[in-house]
Image (tube, rainbow, N blue to C red; front, side, top):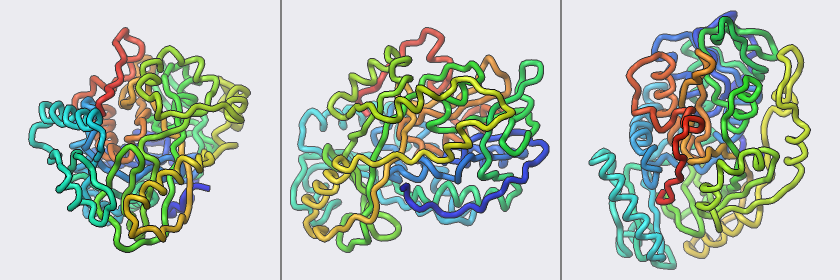
Length: 445
């Protein structure tokens, strides 16, 4: 079972119309709805399960600029600025805390990649962020009680953490108070068009007339868009995480190396993962999209475990087109809840405790997993859809969505409202996968 998420009460009373319908109640969806409402638009958000039920409540909870892909860097900087204002502006508690994030290593090649990232990031972001290189002595001060030393790394004091089980629900509840329709459980079956433009969203409970729709469906976005004839390359990886019971005497900053990653939680425990390791289930889309993901596979060699199981056959039987007047898979599968890869995540905890022996009594409170939506170049799609005016897509955040969420929502609202964008949108356009552009993985982040 996934982690316990703060409650957003069910509501299936549909408005007859809205300026924009947002499809998906994860962090991207709620932040998009927030930004659209701040522009004076009427907004309805539809979530088939519960708010933050999938990856938005299952991630590490990091809010970082450190080691972002250079194409995402400015968006990450802007997103962090928004995170710093959310709690006060909305009167909510997301657990946001500027704890700092530290990347450390004893491997010279890894340390050089950290330095290379910092050089390139400063060329792009200037002094808009505060990452600095750190040595063994600095790291010892940041990680008191560590039983091992590290050669070096990079540290960003302004990076932060927040609580994935609280953030999106808190924003959604605040939006309801502002008059935004937050509809759950309310599966969207598809989009209706009139004269080639979006004219309505069809849900299991009825139809909402609208001028625009934003698909922020995370792991479901490729499948949903396929019914509209939109080709969106997106695959899923399964990331496993655990949380401990509350602990005293551990580090307060968040950190990552090749063996583990951790952050202190608001409840006093730690969220722990096994470094950057992840798991991919082979599916029919793995073969359909194989050639688009060759470079991504090369970049993940040694960090990615691949297997085939029940999910392959479930998706093979799933219809790729469907009518809108009958129940769909979105109603039969309300929430994706994959099993964690226990050896992976437990190995991360073992390395964490070995490094901090004062935490040797750590007890596992829960393990869980979630599906991360990954694009061929590992950066998101935040874009209009040229072939369907009025349709917009925000997906493929490749494990970065929680931290980037508020900035991505603001950028999406700018695109929908045709305002000056928060940052340049070129790298995030959907058309990059079909216009002949070279799709590259930046192996340095």
